[in-house]
Amino acid sequence: MRVHIVSDVHGAAAQLTEAAEGSDVLVCLGDLICFLDYHDPSRGIFADLFGEEHARRYIELRTANRFAEARELSTRAWESLGVEGNQGRWGVMEAMVRSQYEELFEALPSPALLTYGNVDLPDLWPDYVREGHRVLDGEVVDVGGLRWGFVGGGLVSPMRTPFEIAPEEYAAKLERLGEVDVLFTHIPPAIPELVYDVEARRFEIGSVALLDYVREVQPRFHVFGHIHQPLVPRTRVGRTECINVGHFAGAGRPFVLDLP
Image (cartoon, rainbow, N blue to C red; front, side, top):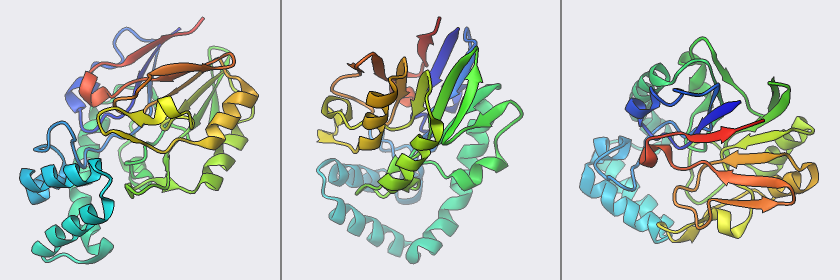
C-alpha cells in the first residue's frame, strides 16, 4: 500500500491538487490555512491585512522569541484598522479564512483521511469537506487490515494559534485510540531533535503523552508534521519509526510511505 502524506499545507492549493497521484491513500495532517508565511512575508492573511513590512517585522519578533513585543505590534496594527478585541478581529478575518478553506478543500483530492493542525479551525471544516473526505481526531480507522490512529491539533504555546489544547485533553485523545499499527498526528513527540526547528532556532512544543504512548504501544510508524525545518527528520523509539513528513508548502510534494 502506497500512502501519500501532506502536512503544513499553509495555502499551497495548486500543489495540493496533485498530492494523491500514484497513491493508494492520501492523508492530510492539517495546517491548511496560511496566516503568516515565514519564507515569503508577502503571503498570508497578516500580509493581506497589514502589509508585507508589518508581516516581516512580526516574523522577526516571533523568531526571536519576543512574543510579547509581537503581540504589541499586532495590537497596534489592529487598532490602526479600528478593530479591538478578539471578536472584532475574528469578524474581519473570518471571510479571509473561509476563502482559503474553500479553495483548499476544493483542491484536496478525494478520497482522503484528514486531521487538524494547530492553525486550523475545526468548527469551520464541516462547511468545506467534500464527499470522500474523512476527518478523524482521537479515532481509529481500519485501512488494509491495519489500525490507523489519528490525533489532531497542537498544545498550548506562546504562539497562541487557533487549535491549541491542554496536555491533559491531548493525552485523553491518545488514550481513546488503544493499540494502533500506524499513528498519525500533527505535532511530534517530545524528543529534542524532533522538535528543534533549525531555521527558527528554537525548540517547539512536542507532546510528552505522545512519547509515552509510542514507547508503550510501539506502532510500526508514527508520522507527523508541524516542525518545518527539523534538526532530525526521523528517529526510532524502540521498533517505532518516528517520521516528520515535511513542510508541504515548502516542498510542494507529499511524503511517500510504503506499507506492506
